[in-house]
Each structure stands twice: as C-alpha cells, then as structure tokens.
Image (cartoon, rainbow, N blue to C red; front, side, top):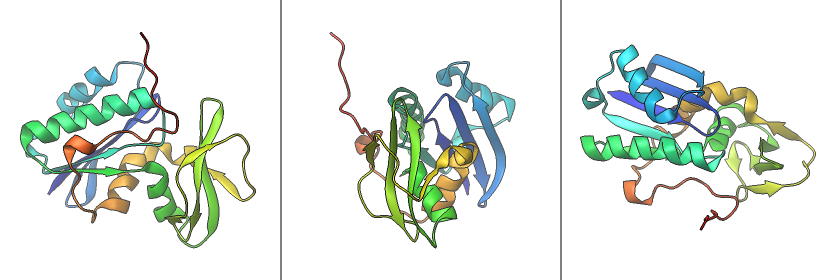
Length: 180
C-alpha cells in the first residue's frame, strides 16, 4: 500500500510517501515557492505517480489557516479525482500520541500572537484546542517536531476511520474572516 501524508500548517511543508508503512520519500521544505506548484514538482522530482497512491493523509491543524486550506484542498482534490480514501490528523494530537503518551502536559504551538494548544493526559487530549495568551506550567512547544508532522500523523492515525472528503476543514481557533 502506498500512502501520501502532508502537513502544510506553516511556511514549511512536511511531505511523506510511505510504502508498506515505511517512508520512501520524505521532504521538509520551506515553501518559498507556492505550495500549489511545490506538490507537483515533488511528484516529478521523485517520479511519483498519483494514480499509484492508495490513500491520502492530511493535517487539519494546528497552524495557519491559509497554508492549511491549500494543503487540504490539494489532497482532497487528488483523493476525489483518484477515488481514494482520505484521512485527517491533527499534528499536535499525533505528537502527543507518539512522544507524550506517559505524561500529563500542555502541548502548544505559537501561532501569530497566541499559543494554540491543549492539555493531554497519557497522549490523549483532555480538552478542545484553543488559544491561550499565557502558557500553563508543564507546557511544551511542538515546533521541534514540525519536520516530522506528516510521518507522525500517519503513524498515530493509520488505523482511524476514513474521513468524508466533503467535511474536511482546517481547525479554526478564530472564526474565519471575510474581506469585502
């Protein structure tokens, strides 16, 4: 089975192709070029044929709304066009499951002028993800794992139920704004 996993939650992209659960292609790159052109260029550079991908994983957050929406829409489009299953993951939940499964801790990521995070107990989220102005004690910034978000997202959620492509949206900690 061949799987593509993507996290585009910041100005960096974490892209992973797995075959038989082993990473075959792993790219972590600052997206100075547009994500819309970066993904096809990665397919070309590594001779990846989208029709050979059996399933898609995509991060729905936490992160910046615009890059998340772009990554989600790219993966949703490929999954729909190829009629393949799509699965979502939350990067902070993946890190909690992979690294913090024996502790009680507040995990967060700095986003704009706030800390976005949640409390975890033994790797499981105890509350909704939301913005905080100040950090609680026993907190940990997950940014150091950013390069591995796509891989850990797959590992942590590889046994979850398939998502409905029409219901996949980024996590919003603030209501989306409209410019008129």
